[in-house]
Length: 194
Image 1: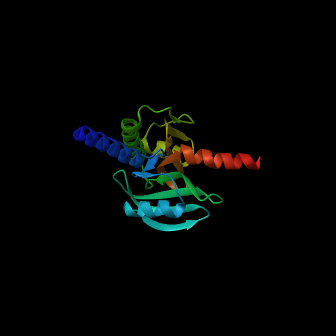
Image 2: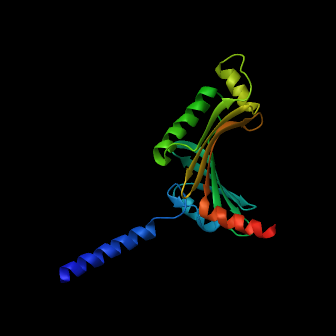
Image 3: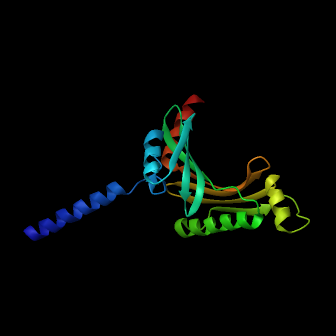
């Protein structure tokens, strides 16, 4: 009898510990996208990112992400609520279409392994490319005539992978995480204003 009681208590303790460590929020680098901006930045610093600065509810960090060096990370909170709901990664700028598309497709493959098939996937140029070469394609990215976007929907939130570019900022891949719970809190607060 004592043995059965012990096993039951052990099972309950194990389950409650598991329940406490499993987050209902979407995670970024293993950190739940939740809490104040200061708390979230502190946890990302523990994961090896360097805090560059914070302004207007956005904290900028630098560091490695998903085996890519020197990425820029932006953690975004609604200033009035000071609740983190969105985290974005800007991967280093690249000069060739082959490098840029390789990063995009490598990240897409990893995300698909983790989150399943994407909900949305658009991979096209907005104009007809006369010469189907690397220089022509990277030019179209700089002209903002490239639409490569893949979106994943999970029960905890959404993830969006995209190729972006301009003549001033260069060409790069972005990855944005939208936490569902905190996004709904912020939306509810915005709805009160309407």
